[in-house]
Image (cartoon, rainbow, N blue to C red; front, side, top):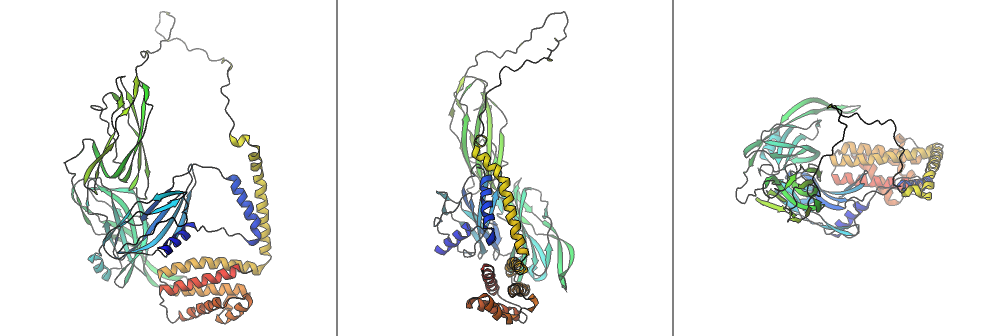
Length: 611
């Protein structure tokens, strides 16, 4: 497990550097100083560690991703516990990919995601166990992640023999309870080689179910026999509103379908047409809640929840004064159905209850997990009350198929009697024999305010002279940075050869990304065509020759002019040889394409770093 942890640390701690020219080190230093002067302290966001699968339900042979999410923390070296392997799932720990996401607002947050390719080999339900890591000096434990792998549908195999496209529906579970959230995955499968443009989500009109407002979309591939399908995946949540055997579906896809018709000077041409494809249906069995051990205060919440009481303030009040209760419910399930019922006929008889203020914070893309916070105001009506009755929250756990009840113990408070009766103030008016109200007092003359109020202290940045001087230096530093940048560009423009080299390096970096995409898509013809043009541009710029004049015979000149190592010269020769053979053998394995991409990256690194 040592190499797995090493690869993860490299992926987590890797931050793409900003490319500054060698003569622009002063500019980089000035920009760093400028950023430090403008930086402000923001509220620290919560640090957490999560693990999840990109999809909750897949069929055998499909691919997905396992993501490790580090929120607002940096992973300490050698602190991550061993990453487990699950029989039945092929997890490629040696191929990590990462992305960084920063949110700037009232609370700045930073998210780092490390993903690994996963391929489902056998049907079953899999649970990825919790693992430990250390961030910011503390140890964090992830929650387990679950995945359901279903067997291949024989109807798919039958359709794959005759249809170029079709759709289907997958569900996370086929037995649910009313109000229970479950995942619905709608898929559109199109044979590779054809083109599909899906511009809208499929329409699903199914009585007895309510679908969530949020949806996610992704793409994957599925091999069915000798045919490879491009799979468009739409995920939504659903919950049943009544019991019984209900049909879910069909999901109707509307998309532009293109069949390859030939090639032109502009590339591959397609014949496009609009297709409407309904999917199959799924039978969902919606079970009734059991009647035994059903709490009286059950309000219909279904899921896996926990209850946390925050505070009750103030605890010493007068009769008729409000008390604010703050508590929250968090976990997995539909947060809309969660409510806390206070029975004013029994336990809360001596209180006046107001409608609570609620706030929902979702912790997943589809809203299947989150936190619902409550702010409840209660008013004691007499001074004989000595405690707040317990808060009770009941829900049904579909995993254990049982009711659960959570809550608090009675909370002691002190209610004092009012000091005097609430008497409405009266306004004295002269009795002039009429019932008309007295005239308003004149407000033409307002007295001068004798007291100016309390003196507020100045903010720290206003009373700090050094901070004011730093702020005044910002325009000057910005002007110097722009001047140095302009001088550097003028020097580059006076050297056409250097300008051509830099342009070729930049284009080569963009072409490397396209080569990786073509490798994943197994498009070897386009791969070697782009590879040959990239080599011509790089060597042509280095030898100051037209790119069309570069062939495999120019390798010796390039080695002589650049003092290229023998190993790299051998790689360059093998790249030209592979491009020539591609005209006669168009089919190449993924490993061969990946090796060619790696050799090209080494050549670009050598040429761009050479003095």
